[in-house]
Image 1 (cartoon, rainbow, N blue to C red):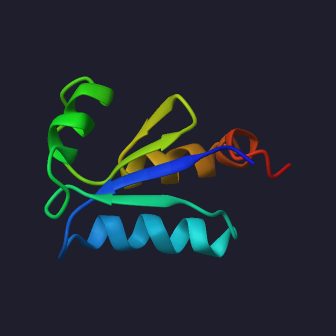
Image 2: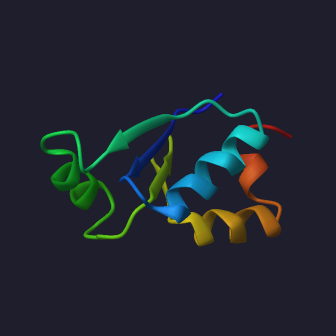
Length: 86
């Protein structure tokens, strides 16, 4: 299974929804809270080419984007392929 990383912050409904979606697919992920981990925001900005909103979701080296981007991939039938679920 690929490595899934979510950069998030507290009180972010989109972060919560993204994590619930992955939990629903039984996909393990690592969460990095940019409001709690020193340097995490700068790391997220570098990896996401300057995207400042959370969540920022990565599947291995692929930058999914945010929650709505992940939903779009799921609706297109591409998310499960990225997650190697199908």
